[in-house]
Image (cartoon, rainbow, N blue to C red):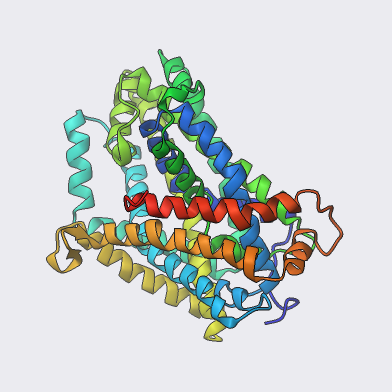
Length: 453
């Protein structure tokens, strides 16, 4: 498929919102707040912002360069950079990683959708023990989470099938502003609670006595996770960019939007948590167990307000999950369409059915079905560990090595400057980052999680 035949985004706004939607997801609204809570609040936020600037943006630009230059699916794009076709393995890894993520991510997305409906029905009321038992009963049910996950994948499928402009871009222009509106509404409600200023102090007033090696490495990892680096999403979306798109400018704008969503998520959660005396370091259970209790205590004296806030919050979670799942599905859909030479609708169907199968396996593994539990760990947890802790760092590391040490520097500079039409003011700094700083930081994360450093 030539560049002229390949679909493109229709506008600069479409590029920014669609790619920002790819990055903005549960990593921002769910993972960022609990990581911030566990790593000292504002201290973590400062280091995270520096990591986005020094590592996240250069890595995103790198994937933009590969994607736009290749003008094809992620696997083939790496093979079109003028070097050995063997480097396509990086792209293949990204495609495989996205496919694995789509399975368990669809189940978590289904959880968000279920909680949205439960909040609207008024079921998000009760004692702290009730919320613990509710989540346990729901997540381990052999049928219900699968139904919600399939519904979520079906909605994703309908958007991806409609293509780049009529599906992905159009949906992003609707979903991203709606996501911001919901965020702002809940932030205002949370910040008006008695004692909310303690939560804002925790988020914005750093105490560098809490700065440790673990905090730094956690911040690097979160910046990588939040921006969807090495999943193939960024690279695939870049293949739909026009040749006039300013790649560095787009990366900065998308990173700013992504970081704003993460910070707003912190402003939404920490004031409410501190207002009712809930610890900010509740961990991964924060969204599905701790926060319903927070909403109950903070807004319980006005049941209608409690229902509205809970419904708005879980609607927000569902929207964030949807924008990310669209991009994750698009990675594999584009690959199947171009490598198998089939229509987009057939490719999307293959991906959706495959994701449903993985989702069923992931969900059943949480129900303690023996054949889906390996070494005492569910396949859900294995998929999350293998993709997040192994495949993503490896993919990001070799992308930096690829562009920094293997691909002709002239090609990289031409893409960065749009063939000399843009100033190369920051190219030297970018090239230094991907040759040395980024790969070393990613390697440090990878080794640290296994206790090597």
